[in-house]
Amino acid sequence: MKKGLDLSMQHSPEDFTCPICKQIDRVEKVSAVYEAGTSIGAYSGGTVGVGMAGGVVGVGVAQTNMTGMSQTNRSLRLAPPPQPQLPQGEGCGVGLLLFLCFAVGLVGLGMALADNSERLIGAALFTVCTAGFVSLLVVLGRKSRIKKAEHAQQIVRWQQAVANWERLYYCGRNDVVFIPGNSETCVPAYELYKLL
Ligand SMILES: [Zn+2]
Image (tube, rainbow, N blue to C red):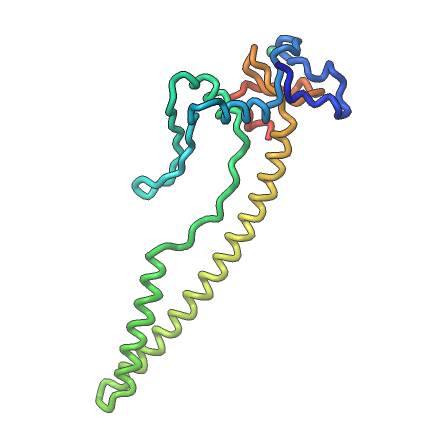
């Protein structure tokens, strides 16, 4: 099982020996192990889900078939870094605030246009709500630009992490991950992220 060994790069074959057991027979490319684990036969494998519970976002892994379990767990531990998601907007709170400003502003406008003693109050309401509405939009726009810039940085970092992941090799005997040609980069499979 040496599939996925990429000997065409500038590495010598010795680079692919496991830094722990100094053997090559159980060494496989991490991406190949991962892909093999997610496409085995009929079993559906592990399903990674992202959900909300009590306002907290969590990631869960569900195991659906016992026979494929070890393969799937191993494959999941060797999974590539997940793509960062664009953070959600401000949510209902701010939307409600915007709507309130709009609605109260309209009421104020109606009062200001009416020919009675409440005209001044209406005009004041309308002015305050318009100012609130506009400044809310400005603040939201600025926040959204910052979030997008942060997300762009995360994407760059993630692409780098995926490129690093593509270089990793795995030894099934010692359950370790390493970068060929650099024996100092050898960590247990569950600490794979340290090499990304
Ligand atoms: Zn080994």
